[in-house]
Length: 427
Ligand code: C5P
Image 1 (cartoon, protein in one colour):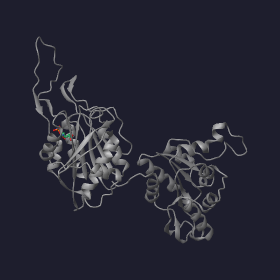
Image 2 (cartoon, helix red, strand yellow; image 1 turned 45 degrees about the vertical axis):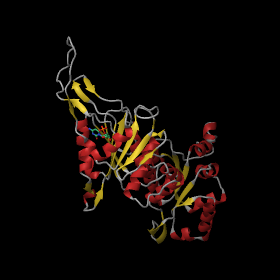
Image 3 (cartoon, protein in one colour; image 1 turned 90 degrees about the vertical axis):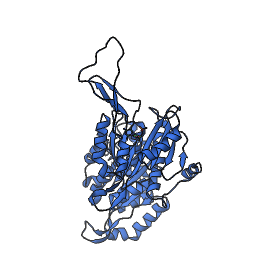
Image 4 (cartoon, protein in one colour; image 1 turned 60 degrees about the vertical axis):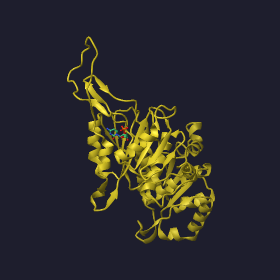
């Protein structure tokens, strides 16, 4: 999703740079628009560096000039059409007045008229200007048109006065944007340790044993959890996917390395999601030189790899963040099966000590390895199961994350009608 951040001329203009970063952290594409007055406080270059895009500062290429080309003359229309939300922070009393009256005398105010997407306005000004009947009446007009106003904080103002008018905190403004976009932010405070992809177990310097995992399921979890506000540590075997922005990637190759990486980060994790297809066996004695073709067949002796999931489940309670507070760490495992899916998944729940096993039959079309969709059934330690229809791996991830929240807060988890209807299939 794409957000336009409009910056107007107030002392708090520098905080808009932080807002851009905050929105990007949640996977939003951001473009910045600076009014002429904003540029007295902060330079377009700051926003160009943050967004990696041209920053719009003028309606036309230079004052009095004809537009350089037709594209730039109608750029406000192009921007209006490609964004999903317009947020103006800080919004001065002057800009608020222009928006309320429909005056379109610069790019930002013209864009406001040209767009139909939700608008978030975070005012910042002197307390008297804020309390002035004109400003309040203008805000009321904007509110009645559906704009989300993120009220300013009270405190010391740049002008030396004390009162309301200080730009709201970046988190409050970002929350306003997430709300109007319908982005959930319910995993804030959780640290998810996610494993993904296959592992590679060396036979000799040129050969290895691996499996068909593409990492798509685990990476979908990482992206979904990050977007919902979680800190994500993604321990990944070799895959061709790029780690989603904002997650902390840890790259490994073998089951042994994955085990070590998971143990190293376990203390930080409030929940663990093991989506990796870890090799269950590895060559007992990897050869130091390439095995030569012989006359006959070759036998390889394999040994079991460490069961990372079972190991993690053994150590269930943690002191988080160095405090004495002990919280249950939730553990979610996967079962990729080719037969007896339900039986094997239930057996894994107890054998591995997981709270939830996400099971799929990898022989089904539209499920399993290297496809963008999955068909899974969730098996709960507390009993019961939920069979989900075929859906994208991203949707599967969100659905499982909903269950993670429900397990965390059994009585208060918000549930959509969609989820309620799916729960009807719970046996
Ligand atoms: O035993 P199986 O490999 O079928 O179990 C699958 C689940 O256990 C997955 O969540 C997988 O990530 C995890 N696993 C593990 N360490 C292993 C093997 C599997 O963590 N050595």
